[in-house]
Length: 84
Image 1 (cartoon, one colour):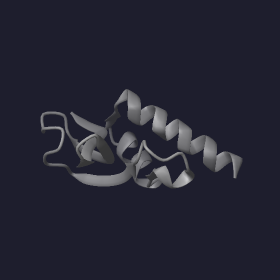
Image 2 (cartoon, helix red, strand yellow):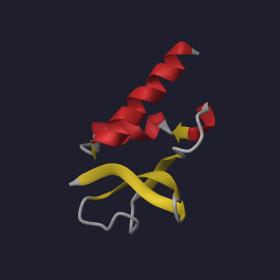
Image 3 (cartoon, helix red, strand yellow):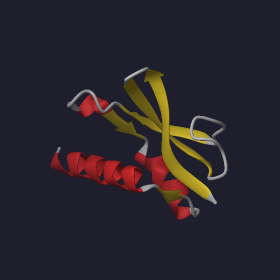
Image 4 (tube, helix red, strand yellow):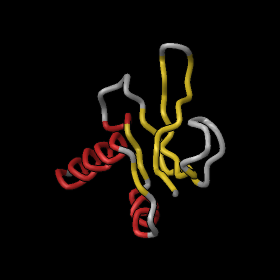
């Protein structure tokens, strides 16, 4: 199954995450199909989260399952876009 999940990057004790589309059997930071965004939990601005919602919706429409955290990030970004 194809998943939309977070892959950890950054330095020790200061993670930065990429939102990736990958096979669920692939390692967390391993091979992925497409990178659709990134998330930095250490800053509290709009720049902390960037997703290509068009590509995310494309993958969901084709059967990809987002993880719980990615679902919450998509909801958060949709609220920010609707408010702007």
